Length: 189
Image (cartoon, rainbow, N blue to C red):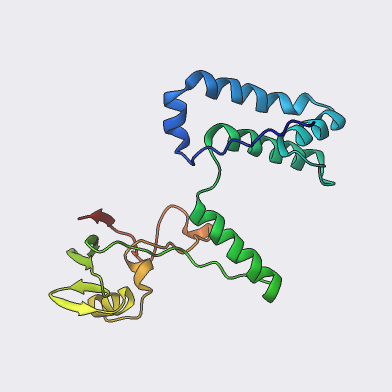
């Protein structure tokens, strides 16, 4: 009769917390991961079989090392959280159906969060509410509407409040000519 070993599923944790709690375990794992580079292709496939309990796919040596290292960390520290697993499953299904996926930044701000932005020498404060946002004693449905009320010009609200940054071109490195991020701060209230 064949003995079946049940796979241990560790809860997802913050790596820094785990490292601080178990520095010896972290050091041992780091050494084991570093040693993967010295293994032959056959030894890597054997390690894959041991960790994943199945046949390794046809991957380059580099990808074999990376996936084995990931699995080692997953077993030591825990895997992806359930919400992250669900999100990846959803994106995978969307990719299969549509042939592409659109990933938008997660803009979930909890009610009570304060967004603070300095604009032309004045501090502007927005409070996130259950229904949208509050600025200057008035309710607004979006940050973009608030940015327009403050500046009189069309701005991306999330960008205006420093939640999203426009990728810098080579000539903009070191300074932001638009002044879009003079002083942006997010404070949880």
